[in-house]
Length: 293
Image (cartoon, rainbow, N blue to C red; front, side, top):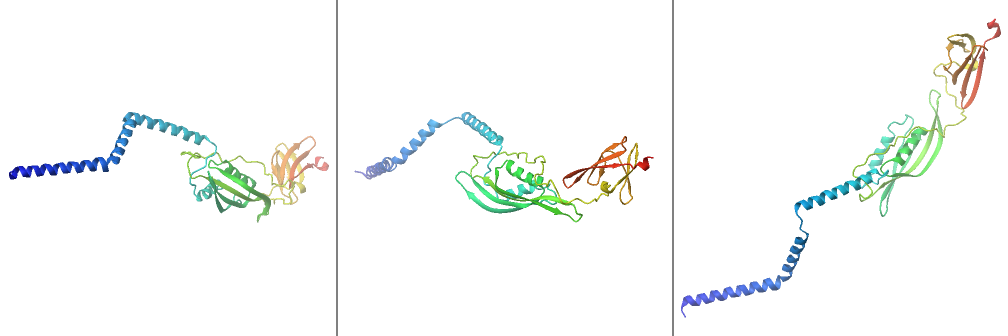
């Protein structure tokens, strides 16, 4: 056997050995991985969609998400997601921004309560304010879009007399408030518009019907209780007080603690209505007979 033929046989043997080893590696050691890849390709082929179908599905899902979001937005209350503690401080500052000068709010953070579906912070609000300012605060908390609830409350009346002697009838209050939030967005809308949280004024239930404090006469109005009717003229009535000062009054004009309600030219009388700390008193001044003669 010549050398050239011998080399050819050796090369063919090496090639056959490589093919056998490669076949064993491919069909024995990699068979499981090949089968998995085939299954994956089959699954992708079964679920394959063209671009237009995928875009149509995406648009349908977007419309459905917008519908659900609008339903959540129309609800009166929503529970926000991962609410910051500072948000309630900002809310109270916004509600109390237009309070009267003698009204104020103290805010104290107390605790956070974790529950299965939602959580809530607890705060304590306290202070002194006019009744309608307290009512604005309570109304704002209870009617806010982001769910807030007053857990407990306490009220007491308080009278403060300023340096001019004018009494101010205030309310001392204490509120425990829960501010709700959630760790998921199933209770909240992506677009939230605040509810109307500014109420109309209501009657002050803490304002005393009978008051010991009588406001001073800072406007130097006529004090009818010590006054004397001097004359009646077509333009009104001349009335003098105990200090000798004269006033020309007409029906509806203010006097100290009340108003002039009627001028009776036939009986030569002038009628007043006074409010003395909740006690309504009617006073009539009459021209003296000698002056009529």
